[in-house]
Image (tube, rainbow, N blue to C red; front, side):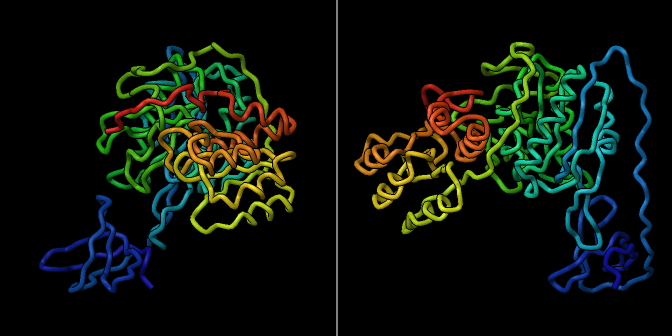
Length: 407
């Protein structure tokens, strides 16, 4: 078994050296030192070397009095990962200090104080971890840091960023940043995303945002409002898009604002980090029976976010089930379409759902409505939550919807 070991091989009259990778095709796969993989069929193994694990040195740096102090809180994810050559998989394994050391350009922008809070992939984030993360960000801002950067896996980054937007009133920038490709890959977006995040963390912003690549090239990042952002591609470097509004700004060598934003020190620092976990997001599809609602209601759930079709619809047989639970539950309708807004007053089905007790979610993203309802039911009673769910609290609802060119 030589997977994960270093090998020198000869093929087509040339010699290649690298790490032996797992292969499902029967080819001999070698990861070269430049980061690229090659697959070989006709080859001769010249020599095999054991690979010793080495510690990654973190370059020492002195605090500069002329630079602001920024806290980096690492939660894991691809931005804090490299390839495990024994399996070929990307694993989360680096500390926040190592992330900062891997991008020395950060040290010309701000003084870094790094903390490793979690070392997990983002699908393992949970509401109790959101609560703890919000508390750590609050403590950092209370200590006087100019801003906070949270490094996070991209798959559920928008959920966590939205959760903090509701739990934390911040007078300073709180930046969520990740990467689509690990830092040891030639096409990694980690370094540029972190540099742009640092510039945003020292700007005059005063809210929770997401900073990620704005194009497939390494030319700029967008600054997205956390509660209006979604990951729209599995692997593209510009996967994150603002939905139903333009990004707040563009950042490369400097920050340039293009939309209204909350400015630094406009709000006081307040932490309100209770969350009700018994809230569910249900995606409607043709033929889905409403007894799924009965099941969750029987399990004690009192918060329901429906991801309906088009303007916000389910099949007509859902109305009676919704009516039975609507007195002591909050039932919010969002749309699978994402762009645009819910309006249940156009068709008979929508009107019946409104009469049954459904609340229109306006132009909220389904996952944002889920997080918002978890926060509301953690802090307010059912009737107050029904009032607040369709009220804009942190920029999650736009008063009107207009066509935007997203090209």
